[in-house]
Length: 158
Image 1 (cartoon, rainbow, N blue to C red):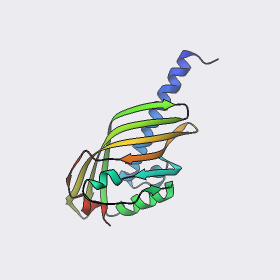
Image 2: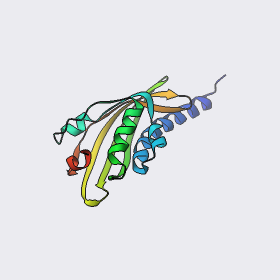
Image 3: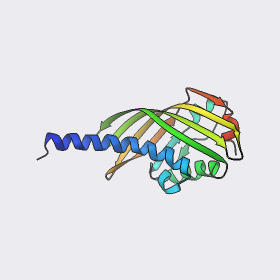
Image 4: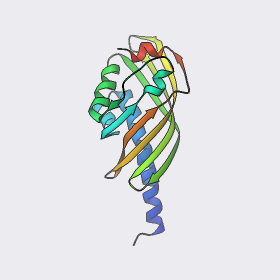
């Protein structure tokens, strides 16, 4: 029989693991660590950067599938763009084996060859997650943009 303490511990662990999926997303990019970055996503994940990119006139495709997301993003940044991601204001709603996470993510992007060319973005994230054993993974990630400074077109165009 599950006790109140067991229930609370399970909920706190789930909340921690849900936010950790977003940390793996950001830190995996920052370290250019393919395995860590991929661990953030379900195999059938979807990443929608179109709302953010529309703010500076770009029209990227919807990315579908963990392998496509990882290959596309790391392929664009590795050896070319240095990044740092900071996650704040996470809000979590859990419904069984699914969850919704909203957060603000500040993402600094600098051209490796010239840190004077940069884009600093403040992005609201809307994330749907699913339980994957003891951890949680991103099934759908929608990234919007509240504001930016710098030149995102120089960063997000290969």
